[in-house]
Picture 1 (cartoon, rainbow, N blue to C red):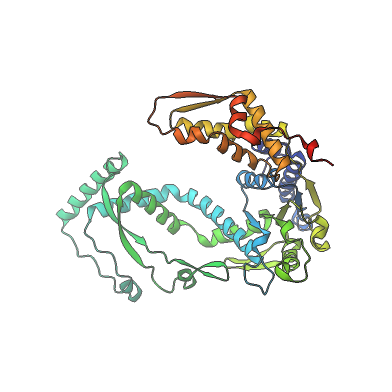
Picture 2: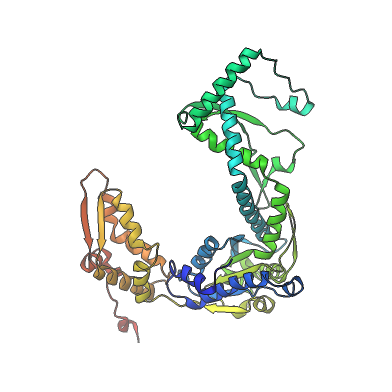
Length: 451
């Protein structure tokens, strides 16, 4: 991660409006990862990440910052919700599964990188297999029992003339394959019949993988086009070429040193009820505590230490307060940032300045059915005002309010557009917005409700 904090913030600004304090905290934490990696080993082992606690109402960008962060950094990342975990002794997921999920994410990243390195070789081998299948379309698959017992039958010796004919035919097929002339030809490919996953104590378990290599893989024949077969065979050859021991070793190292865990809805486990449905809330906090402060977790790939992982927790804290968390857990999140509710100006910036603005999304969606939307500035002002008013008078759901308003405002256009009409231009202005939003677009006089 060689981006500077300013570059990280600029990247986040493309998708998230405001919340500069949270962006700066995240950017500094990520840059400190890079700085720590450049230090000598004896100094590096003494420096631990400064975990972050984000406090703010729903829909203001907490989860979005984490999601964009995951796409930006080339590091193992996992997002979990604190409400999905239970205290040890209760039915449900235990908190150690967070680290196991992180290791799985790390393995996927490292495996994808390793696959990229052997992709060229895997492609050549896959195309050779396709040529072989085209040369011998009626060849029977090998019986796995014969493989297990070592009774694989030998192919009969061919005459020299037949060998020459097959070699010439193979060259012709290889050339046709290179030119893309065989993409729609159907062939039968032998594929592994992967066993289905089961569920034990809320965790997904592959019963077949538990047996390891003790039993031969069950296979079946599948008919598909060459274009699809190439993708499947390239993936198989990549798996054969990859050194999984090296991948696992690198994945464990990266999970320990670069792993980022985002724990959402942390405020939902902040209660201290002694009985009833909230009985395990404080227990969940106590179970999370050792993972955050540094512990050892066993995974199917090996033992992982959590000492140097970066933890980012987030919660609205409407009902509970940060001080309702157990003191030990509060102390493990030394960096606290408050995210502010969105204003009318923020809503307008969200609609105009972000790369994934809803206005651009709806313009692209309806253009498929020949409806070309154009939003005037007065429309954006009216939508922003309606969003702010709705959040003030109803439940404050932040930027998610815009999705509700857009669906309500464009319902008629979306329903009537079907692609069976000529191109039509539709201009959305302030009057159109107020007319179609009804009560949501009207300003409410709050003085009437004040005694």
